[in-house]
Image (cartoon, rainbow over all chains, first blue to last red; front, side):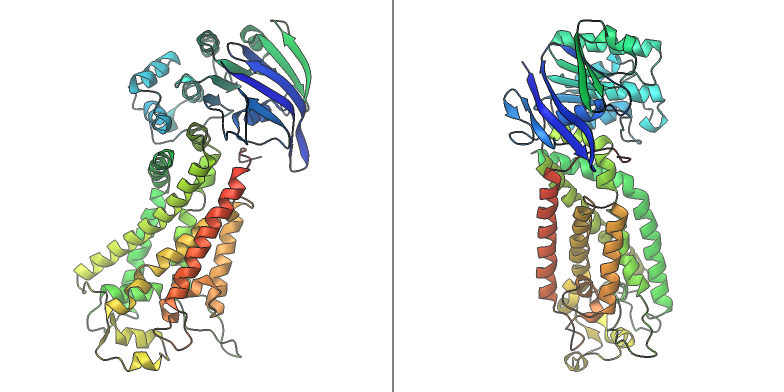
Length: 217
Length: 281
């Protein structure tokens, strides 16, 4: 079980406040949607939860452990941040294998299954460089979920995806939720977010301006 | 354990990314060696491995500012040192804004990530010099001598006023064991220290500007013969074994190891609180 507490978190970058006094509580088995226009702070808030950036004020704790003090990064997390990048000269399978070699949690079979789940061929020798935007997006999603993490963060996962791809994201989010993961997802499209999230946080200019439970945004 | 896995990852992805630069360097080395044969190496009794290496790492004699004595940057020496510094310049930050973000989160350790990047930078420098040694070996095998001895006549060509101690040594060659560390390992040590320093500075300013700082240190080192300017220790021509007011190798070793350690520790302190953003942010 994962329990995240974001407590009065603010972040200023180059004298520009990007996150202002945000507090929220997040639990396992729930899909949280972050909604807001570009520059509203969705991606920054996700980066704060990932541990990639540190709050200027406030703190984020995960099961009682404070991020940046007790732990550098969440114990078990899979991320997909906007425009994921992989190694150009490697195939999708090789890229995921290299990533998996750091933690040694996912086996070759897990990687193959995950690639199949996102609609990519695990046996394809095609280099990442030759992937279409949609394929790159799918590989990024595969990287986020392949190790079955406790927290899954997906930032604009439906960008560059066709209808089939969007349905695939919906299915993956649902699967992750059923597995018991805490899923955070951001999306421009209100309709898609409505269909995916159990709770939605509305962000505007770095502030949390609304919290909606249920499907209506 | 994580550290070793990250090292393996960095060696794999970093080297692959920089492989073209190494190829360009190998071509440059060929050019330098040919250049040596037709300039300072012309007419030498036997061109040794030590001769080639001494020529490439020589640098310049002490510059004494006075009317009519124009300062000329020792281009070959500066290029030889700037090339590995350029090779190690961008990868850590490219990695951090791309695939490396996932790797860092998977590794869960900023300490291991930073140390592996330091290890990668030092490895890159070492491979660069291995490549240089390889190219020189080729030239020695095809018409030279595989020996670390340095022809005294070459030293006299490069250094107008060597020390008396050197002048009175017997034989046609400066024996390899006296100077091997200077020509083989001092450049590696000094470039490694500069490379990690550059990486640390790049956490604060853009990598290009930290590269400019490294270049500035090298040019200053060429201009002033001073034990406080690290570049002097990488110039074989300024060793106290060859000139009276030269720099002492042991001091250079201590100085470069201290800079390497300090850069590594300061970089780590900065990186522990470093915000990982996209390039444009």
